[in-house]
Amino acid sequence: MSINTGHGNLAPPRRRVRPNGPRLMGFMNAAVASWESMSRRRQFLSTPAELLELAARRIGLRDFGDARLAEPLEMLCATLRDSPQLTAAGRIVLRADLLQRLCNRLEIEYEGKLFPELASAPVRQPWFVLGWPRSGTTLLHRLLALDPAHRAPLTWEIYRPCPSPDPAMAHADFRIKQAERGVRLFHYFGPDYRTIHEVGASLPEECLGLVANSLVSDWFHAGCRADEYMQWYFAQDLTATYALHRQQLRILQRKWPRRRWVLKAPTHLHGLPWLLRIYPDARIIQTHRDPAEALPSLASLFAVVRGMNCREIDPVEVAREMCELMSRMLLDCMKARDAETRRRDSRARFADVYYSDLAADPIATVETLYRSLGEELGAEARTAMQRYLSEQPRHKHGVHRYDRAQFGIDVPRERERLKFYYERFEPAAGSTRPAWMADRDHRST
Image: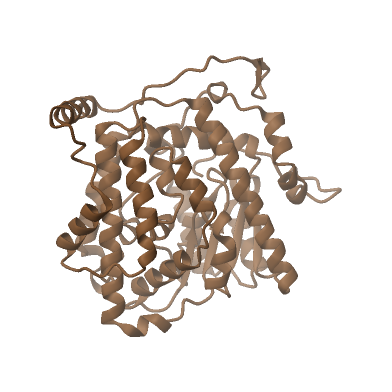
């Protein structure tokens, strides 16, 4: 059967790809696998009870808060234990991430007890950027973060939000060094990732990590395939997840002058109904790019992330998975937007940004966005944004290269699957600008 990739009829072989990682990873996998074979136990995979106990001993606290932690923790431990894809090093890395989430939960609960006023602290009119990965969300988010009236969470704050950071010591916080070590290790084991998405301990980052501290998040599907967990996830009420997200923002802002939060994560496409419930005055900024253009880049990103933890990657399987996941999340988002519009006049609550506009003229696009949300782009913010754009070299960490045909994406089929989305966001009749025009050489997405 031929597969239409949009570049003629091709029939690429189903080829599993070995990840591009350092030689040390291979030695580590072999050593740990040998040890586990001799000991007949996957030592680096703990049971839920063992992980909870280890987190409690590490932090010196025992109250994890929400009792609903048990079910997702059990499912995630089962995924790590039973996944045939994971290497020994991958299990160690994903277990360490899960353990950090549990440590964060202990500290969040403790902070709430120390400062009970956090329970009612306002998080006023936050702006949320959401859209497909590779649709301009990162560039837009980082531009918005440059406005002095705004605050975006930094990577180190997301990695460990407690205790509340002190603005007077923000550049010397001990967690910055911790996050820097984590970023270096991440880049060592995934050398191709920096060409796709720039990560730095003190850079603004998406708030998916805050959502993940609930253990109810698609975060855990990135590192390895977790189908059973994701089926469970999509059936969950996410009210408690977004309440925990808000509590972490309250903790992060406790010692700071109040500024508007600007946040972003693709996961909010699915979580929008609960997000709007927890943040009733939030402003929602949705980015748009032709999914047929974004899908190969997205599949490449996930293949690189999975490649850090898995023995082999099937690019066609990864692409199909991403197609299904993102089409579902887009549909969830549109349903939530329609429901909110029926409930009340929300014209000033939602704004749409096209990737083509953002790539062609970022400042003009941001200025239009501000006006649509009833705000004005100030001179200081404009200058900061212009400086950022002029100082950001194109392809700073190299060019993100991938073979589009490798992913076997059937463009006509995917466009038919997403017909609801194309019809909703195509330009109005008579428009001179094709909404789906994409700039593949854009500096950052």
